[in-house]
Length: 369
Ligand SMILES: [Zn+2]
Image (cartoon, rainbow, N blue to C red; front, top):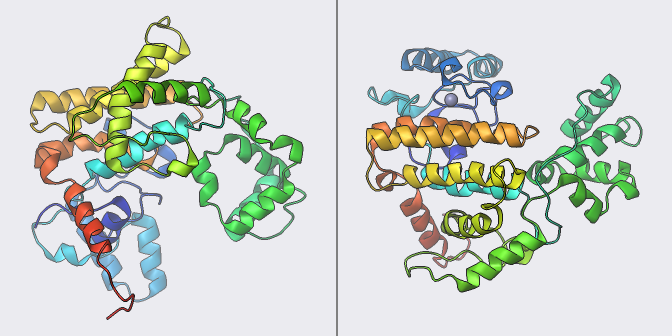
């Protein structure tokens, strides 16, 4: 047994690493969450097997739970039964799965979270007004208390500026992850005139709005795809059509979007923001196509690195208010995985997810055991 193949939350639990949203988010280097926007790989302290075993043993042999917690919060490492395999290296053999990484996370992040695909809003240019850099200390303390506990003190008073600011700047997915009580408090403190859908949309300047999505849909009806390719939902950006599956993201993002966006933005002047957004997006498409090649060579790996780095640098320049995500950081380690394991078709999650789907369709009496 060598590669550990699963989605990221499962991979971290099985391998003994901390969560991908914890301080030490990466299984291959010691970059911390606050440095996640650092794209200089030379500054990422690499993990090593010797240290990993040392901290995992410390955790395993700790006398109390409190001691284990202290070791884990300091080093981001727990014991895993897989460490009994002498050849298994948790700093190199925890797979960054291509299906989850590229289709379900990187494309999702770009199209849904950065471009805000939504058929109910007008098109924008993806820019945001400057974000206030500091809020009063008591406001931050109260808001932090509410975010952690979902209760008072005082959401109606001190937290209002914080929530208003968060409402304007947080991504939809971040807001969705908040606890219900927090959202209730959030709604209670938000002034009605600051929250209408059309005003919020105008503030966020989403890119894939009503007009662009209409053009994409129009092109989709004229496009013939090979029979093996999964079609994207015919009404992207509409809630009732639900979330895309991995194959649908692949078709939508590597076929439909490049066709329509090149038609719409490709002939604009090179310094036009939409043209720049298109060039940046195509860096991602190129990187994903190369990463999923059926053959891999050192030249292809170098090309993948070049496109992915250009894409991530472009994200920081075009959307400076957007932090890189754990998967975006991990994508910079993907070239090393291609070098270790070869073409992704033999180690990505597609086959396993298909089996999950088959198992889930088996009729049961809903009784365990
Ligand atoms: Zn890393």
